[in-house]
Length: 319
Image (cartoon, rainbow, N blue to C red; front, top):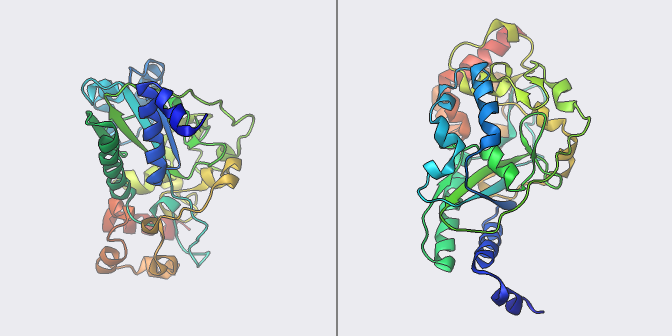
């Protein structure tokens, strides 16, 4: 049976599903899965317990919009489907000075919020041209959406012991994004957890942030301490930061599944030579003017100049 005949015999929702997945690939997304928009009952109690233990640290925004966080139908009227997408950011490129301060790979290029939001809007426009108008909203880590829960339900991978989304074929170095819409579509099924008996991420974490498999205490996480925390880094983390000044990749770098990660080819996620060439002293002597020039479009701006210098000072003085 040729492809045209097969497509014509498909149901309307199957045709729409195929169009969505085909278009997502055209726009550079490495995975696309779909799940039914409904209340995340299996996540409600876990989220409540996690918040009650203050594992969210000073991220008080995670306590707000509890109902919306668990039910996408409260975010998009009459929504029926959550389309989960992933976009690769892995790079083999490294900061040239091995003794320099470290920055997470996700921050090597431009701010993903803007890059992927732009791609999502273009994808949505293309889908409406092919399917017809429908009600939808796009999300990139910018609203109370439990992106990993939806990605897991949509079959993009499983949530690993380090609490990050992992794919057997793609590793974990990818951003997540969603389109919540009022279309009825064919739904994917979750994949099995393939962490097995491995505890590499737990064993490697220098601050013991993964307090047990699948549970992260943000208060101890280097990414939280260097990005989200606006206060001074607590003294208990002296000599434990391993020179990370913005984010941390330790639990991903040691994950065996990341041997399948492939180099991203997106121009906007490529690091500049100026950034890669920065030595430790360049960071220490960094001025606000240089910060604004070098990191103009970078997610590092989220820490702001004072926040980044605070991180640098803490690590410099504790080593």
